[in-house]
Length: 433
Ligand code: SF4
Image (cartoon, rainbow, N blue to C red; front, top):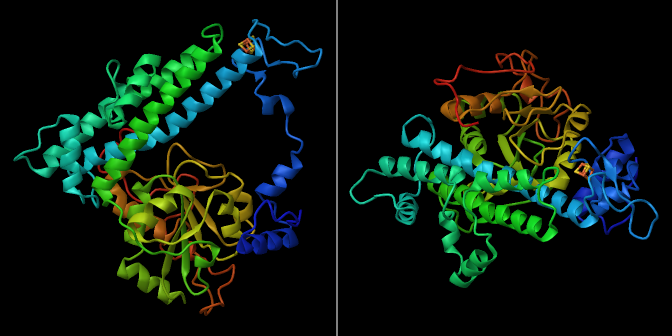
């Protein structure tokens, strides 16, 4: 293991201290894995290795070398680089916009009273969005408006013609530029499919045209999917206001059950934060020698619950393994995106339980407790209580005395541990996942 020697890589003292611990204990982290793969593939770095069809992979020669500069099909360096970049853009659009789809779907369920635990917290914003989307609002109950707003937002994903509605929030001159270039986004999913189609073998070979298509898809996310996510989250969870909170690894407490929520979406995290305040679970935590249940965040999920609930942030993407290496994390609940599979090996060095919750993001060897919007309070409570089963309570514990045997996640009565754990049958078949 390499001890961090270059402050330029990370200067945060808390992270450096934990990296030193990792090095001393032989725990491999992202920096070690990167080092092990250095130097990385030069062709990959330049984007001149094409695997789009099975005539390849076509590893083109680097500029200035004698190796061929076109693929088997005749695609040039410019074409191959542009195709790869456009596909990267489309993948990012798909991920971020799918977040927006999930929020719109949750609003639909909440409006139909099929998502217990969720409610409309910002009715003013809901009605403002209704006006923007052309949904009738005057004199109608909030739930009816919410249902139509959710349906209008979901329709933005499959829209085939016209313009993504929220893109009209951009300055008029900017919109005109997009129209002139033919990159005003039409529908969110449509632009992702468009990029995947045109980048396929033997389709678009014009690098400028390819990049413009990638930009159109990106606009569909920025002014479509991601904007839907932001606005509807405000409707469901409240519009954030400035608040004070704490960040960095020091938010993990020696005297508490530390539950880290990690990923990108606040749908589950909001429910987990609520469940962690359950008096019965707090009493159980005290029974086990902890003062309280300390919910912390990592990565974008952290930001979501930080800005609305003041939940402390234990770290960013690069600190996810470091949080575990503090030895203080009892469980890490993850949803989607930015979750390193390497967490599993790190967690195995400690008492930490990793719990996956999304059907889109499972990791081999990790307990999977699937979350669906129609049973969020039950699911969140089970996640807070833990996914393990059957270990007796640990020996006497107190502030600073918790050890790797203090398994928050192994309370008697917890659901049996398995790779496909569950706590209760959903009240209806989950949809939209
Ligand atoms: S699309 Fe062309 S460059 Fe790419 S793998 Fe196929 S043959 Fe090679």
